[in-house]
Length: 396
Image (cartoon, rainbow, N blue to C red; front, side, top):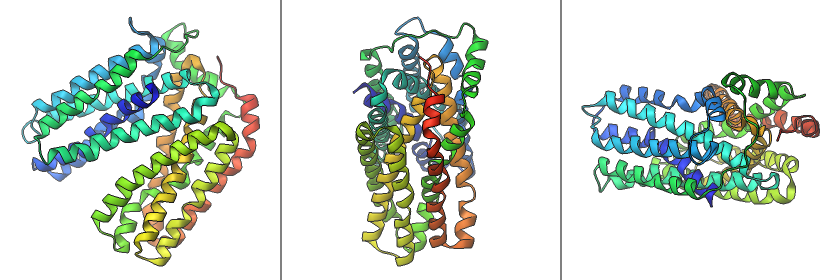
């Protein structure tokens, strides 16, 4: 339950500085160019590894190293989200920009603390289920602060919407207060150690480079297939309403189902076999979009494609997240997990960038065939998994 509720707390702020804030600014007739620039406010999510060592080294005077930082970030988030209610995008863009950056900073910091808490709390055999439950909470929060907030804004002032979202942070605060602090381990002796030792410890492991390359490649097929889903479906003739109903709602539900299935199934499969099985399913599922591209506009095929691809991708996410958690040395969990998730973000950006060029020049069928075949290098690297497990064993 704690993992579920802290997952909710982790996912709630994202849309409030993204799509939901964009909708509010659009209602206030803010220039479209300015709205686009606000995407820079989410920069802290990509840079959280820079201050993660501080959260490994310093211990707040209450609740312990992990829960103390979680509570600080959650209270700060509740306050900064509530402050939006006292602003008007039409007249105080500078203040809103500052608050958006502050929310993103505290949200990224909360993610650092929650990821470390989850990694240190779960037993090895619980990593898959924990990853699934955390993603469930995260996705529910995205629906609440995204679709839920937009629906509320049709009936209530935007200021009230943001006050309600600030109040929803109390869910994570209560979970943090009632949780148990993970068992303490030997801490870095100095701040310099907190910055240097996590990197040194990881790179001194045999096969560290292979692991990083695998993390870069494993989800690349799913990222490539999802990068252009909306323009692909629009080109086939589906309406924006169709896409909102199937991709943005039904698709999120399918992803939740996938991570729950993956998390539960991993208990019997084990991490290595789960990465194999879910990775193959994740890659092959892209062929459903190839079928849709070949057949043209077909509602049954579209729904089946979205369902299959999201379920399989969700299963892959559960295994992928569990694998990252298994790599973290408990002395530096916050820093190492933040570094690994930053690599994941880099992989997503690098993969998404050329997708438009490929689709435009090769056509949709070849594009989705490539998105399936590109899964092979990552899967091939799993033949080295036993070497990683023997040589790269997280410290205690």
